[in-house]
Amino acid sequence: MSHLLKVIHLCKGPAHRRCLATASPPAIASRSSTRFGRVLESGPSLDDFLSGDLETTGKSERVVLGNTKGPRLPTYLKTSIPSGESFNKIKKDLRGLNLHTVCEEARCPNIGDCWGGKSSLDGRNTATATIMLMGDTCTRGCRFCSVKTSRSPPPLDPHEPEHTAEAISRWGLGYIVLTSVDRDDLVDGGARHFAETIRKIKQKAPQILVEALTGDFAGSLEHVSIVANSGLDVYAHNVETVEELTPFVRDRRATFRQSLEVLEHAKKQGVQVTKTSIMLGVGENADQVMATLQELRKVEVDVVTFGQYMRPTKRHMKVDRYEEPAEFDHWKEVAEALGFLYVASGPLVRSSYKAGEYYIENVLRKKALQTEVPITSKSSVPASNDRHRNP
View 1 (cartoon, rainbow, N blue to C red):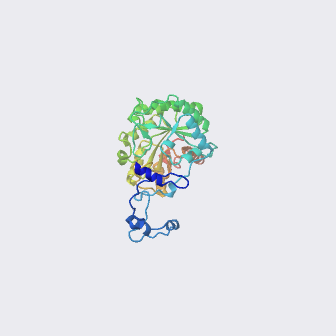
View 2 (cartoon, helix red, strand yellow; view 1 turned 90 degrees about the vertical axis):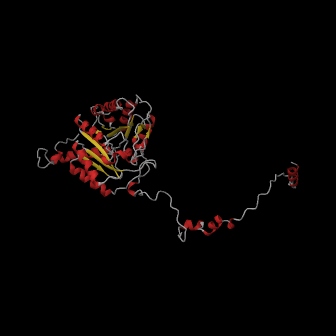
View 3 (cartoon, rainbow, N blue to C red; view 1 turned 180 degrees about the horizontal axis):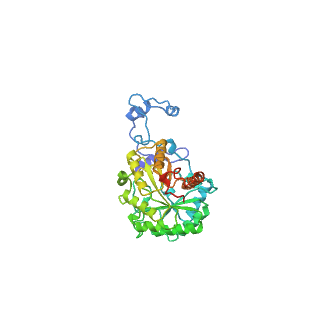
C-alpha cells in the first residue's frame, strides 16, 4: 500500500493532477519480428484490394466466400424487391385480420409479381394471393418446405373463414388460391374449415374463382369429398416430385399413390378442373417425369405446373441442378401433347404462381378457339380434349 501511495505522489504535476501507475508489462515483440506480422507485411496492401490487381503467386490464394461446390443461382431466378399499391394493400389487410399466406411462409420469390397483379384481357384484376388456412404451423416436415412444423399446432381460429372472405372481397381479385398446412392433429384434417371458408368467399364475392390447394387428408377420401363439394372452381393437390423421389422429398406420411387417389376422387366428385404441381431440379430424370405425367393423365388431372426447386434455407435439401428455361419449354410441350387442359412451366412458376393470369387468359384463349372451330367437328378437335369442358 505504501508503495502505491508513493507512486501516486510522484505522479503529481504542476496542475496537481493525480494518476495511478501499474506494473509495466513485459516488453512486446515488434509486429515485424512475429510470424503473423511478417505475413501481413509481405501480403497485399489495401490499395491492391481496392484496385482489384491481386495476383496469386506462391501459396497465396484468393479467399472466396459462399458455397462454391453447389450450383450457382442463375440470373433468371433473381427477382426484384416487392412493392406497389396492390402489394401493400394485401399485406396490410393480412396483418389486420391475422391471416397467413404461403407466399410469405414459404418465401416465394414471386410474391411481388403475384400480389401486384395487372388487368387481364377481360378487364379483371389478376393479382393472386395464396391464403394459408389453419395457422402457420404444419404437422409434417417435408424437406423442401420452410413452413414451421409442430406435432401439436395451436387450435383453429373459428373466425378465420369469415375474415378470409372479408379480406378477399376487398381486394378485387379475379382468382384466389386457398391452401393450408397439414393438420393431422384434427379429426377431419381441417376439411370442414376449408369448405366453410370457400362457401363464405362465394357468398361475399361470387365472381371470384376459387382454387383449393389441399393436403392429402391422410388418405381420407371422405374428407376430400367435403372440400370437393364446397363450391370451389379448381381442386389442386401437389404430387411435388416423381414417385421414386417422393420418400426423400416429402414427409413419409405423404405418398405418391395417395396423392393420385386424392386427385382422382376429386374428379369423381364432379370437380371440373383438377390441378397438380411438379418441382424440377431435385434429382429426377426425364423418364421419371414422363412416367409421372402419364400417371396424372390416367386419373384425368387437367392442369399441371412445372417449377424450379429453390432451397429456402441451409436446413433444407440441396438443389440438385438448376434447369434451363428451354427444359421447362420442353416439358410444357410434352404435357400439352399428353392432353392436359393447361400447362404452366418455367423456372419461377409455382403451383399458384400468377394463377389468375394463367388461368383466366387460358380460358379466354380456348373460348376464342371454340368460336373459330365448331365443337361438332371432331376431326378438327383433338380426341384427347373432347372430355374437357371450360369451367
